[in-house]
Length: 255
Ligand code: ADP
Image 1: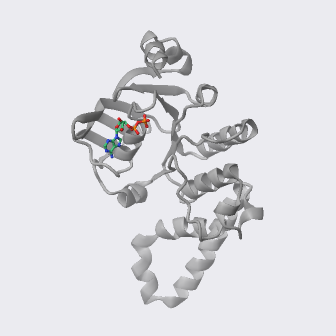
Image 2: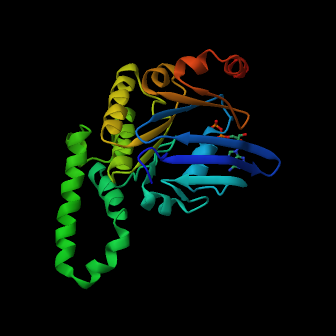
């Protein structure tokens, strides 16, 4: 495999729910190091696309190739192990764990393939535990969350909770990060911070796909944008190109 191979290739994916075609022959290719925007009116299929990519749904038709391998319909934990990570529109943090423990759970899960070794060698458990804590503290520091480490996420302002969720998703150093409306509910300053966080994530070598309604953020952050409407890709290109597309303008008039 050469260096130009895409990280993700979605090939003519359709997703049918009873009578409703939520995705209709959607194809897109995301290059390594890209920040790709996915936009579209409500109900256009954006979250369904993430659910198919991350293995929550098996598509009715089509393929999902990740890092050159066909992983269509693999369970989410296998996508995770292959290097994919995501956040959800509605936060999914563990409310009765602390911020640090939320990170530890994510870090610990990412190593389950090796866990049998630790049953055989108790000394390794301690070493591994220490290493996980070191990694968690490093992530807390990197995302400005150290002061909140011992608190329950639910006790924190919403913007901080969003940051914890992103920190948890990148703690395992994924190849691809899927962000589902990360700016929802954030104020202007928090959106600015989010933008910096996403840039720093990409600078760390992680490819990012972001569903977002905040067009200012999409325009400033993404090199390329894919526009969905009615479960189809109606435009793809630079932010300026898609903004000038008549099909896009028309799709948003009815939103
Ligand atoms: P978006 O994220 O762009 O707002 P969604 O992907 O959430 O759009 O939804 C696309 C369409 O698929 C909507 O009509 C929605 O009601 C439908 N849909 C999504 N998930 C399911 C599901 N699990 N069962 C039935 N219909 C669904």
